[in-house]
Image (tube, rainbow, N blue to C red; front, side, top):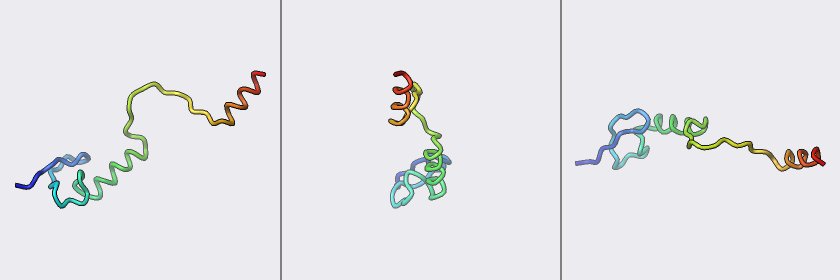
Length: 65
């Protein structure tokens, strides 16, 4: 009996073996998931922090002198 899994995007049952899109059921579902990653739809909870470039940090240090 072929192994079946649920597509993470649409939850439709799909075959694992010989599925070029696994763990997704189709290229469409794979691209939807990729889009969520690109738009930062998946996040790990944690503290937010300010990311500054080296130039911004140098300018801040000059202001304090």
